[in-house]
Structures are given as C-alpha cells and as structure tokens.
Length: 305
Image (cartoon, rainbow, N blue to C red; front, top):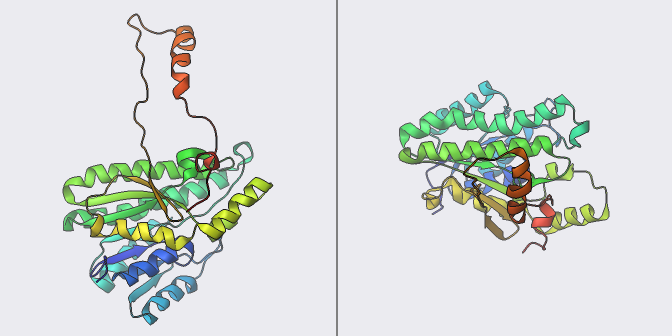
C-alpha cells in the first residue's frame, strides 16, 4: 500500500531533476501520474519536445505503474487546461498537483533585461497561478486536493544575481498561503518547498569563485532530487492531511519548517513620529532585531546531513 493509492497526480517539470523524482516516487506510492514537461533545454525558452516527458511516463509504465505524458508549458493557460483535461479524461480524476517546473536567468539586477525578468516571473509565478487556478474549483467541489508548490531560499533569504527568481518565488509563498486559507473549509491544501538539490537548472548557475564552487560541489554530492521528492509526495498525499499553508526547506536528509513574517518588535510614540525621531529612536531600538544581508549560504552554513 502506498500513500497515494487510488490518487491521480499531475507533476510539472517531470522529465528531469526534482520533477522526475516526484513523478517516479508518486507512481511507486500508487498514484496514476500525468507527467508534464515542455521538454526544452535547461535554460528554457526553446521549442521543447514531447520526448522527455514520455520517457519518464514509459519508465513508470515499465515498472508496473500508470502514467501518461504531456508537453505543454505551464506558462500557457490553454496548455495547463489541457493537462487538467488529460488527467480527467484518462484517469477520471485529479487529487494533487506537484509543480517544480522552472528556469533561471541569473544576472545582477542593474544588468537584468526586461526579457530576463519577464520569462522567470512567467514560468515560476504565473506558472504556479496557472496550474493552481486550473484545478482549484475541481478540488473544492470534490472537497479534496493538495498543491505542492516550490519556492526557494533565494527568495526567503536571498542570493545575489537572482532578483527575478527571488521575486517570483516569494510571490509563490503568498499565493500558496492564500490558497491554503481559502481552502481550509473545503479540504484543499497548499504548501511550499524550498529545495536544495542538484539539477539541470542549478547546473546553469555561474561558478565565479572558490566558495561558490565548493557550495555547488556540496549540493551535487549531498543534496539529491530524490530526497526532495520524499517531502513533496508526502505533502501531496492524505498522510499529511492536516498540513497546509506551511513553508518547508528540504536539504539532503534535513527538513526545516521555516518561519513566516510576524512582528518582531514594535514601538509607539503617543505624540506621533517625525522622520527625524524615527531615525533617532525607532531605528536604533529595532536595529538589534534587523536581519543581515547575508545570502543563503550564510544561513545554512553547515554541511548537509
């Protein structure tokens, strides 16, 4: 018996990396899987191919599971509608959406082009909207459904050269939170995962110094996509039926529950503030609670388990 027995799961970006491992594990846990992948290169933006998604679906079928493939883009609302319709037509249902599909266009913000901004926001944030919006009413009507969306520590904590990616990934956190709040009475859940894992997308990050080379090497050797898939599939299933609206980090064999914005410290001045008194009194009092500007590596500074 698997945790997804009798369920139908859509996995986007399912031909490589985290998406592929999620699709394979979901099938091993009993799900019927719609494997979606545009089939483009690691950088995205090309025409794509149906072959990569079909190869994963065929791997599932050869192992005794049930799967079909889809090569539409998450940026296309018509394409996402076809993914949903394919699940309903083929398997007569849909219970979970796992959405790790993504691309990178890393560049310092002052050098970033509009195109580099737009494509990353379109794939990550608009793509997350598209796949959730396509399924939300179905999930509400059947009073069962789980979204597993993907954020990043680049958004939660920050990494230089990833303003487009960070902005989109923090947007996904807000999207997931509202879906979870609005879905509470209808048993519709949504959670986000910030994954540490070696993938084609991570391999496109420029390595410019020894510190970043060591960080990439640690990720390649100790943080695998299949480890992230364990958390994603668990959240997609009813074994985590009471978990919704949360932010998790998956890092090797470590799982972290991340904090969400809440007040840290407050000050009031009965006669009201002025710009100068804010600078003189409010900011110095709050400064010990400020977060520094260190990147992800400064927060997760130890080797993964």
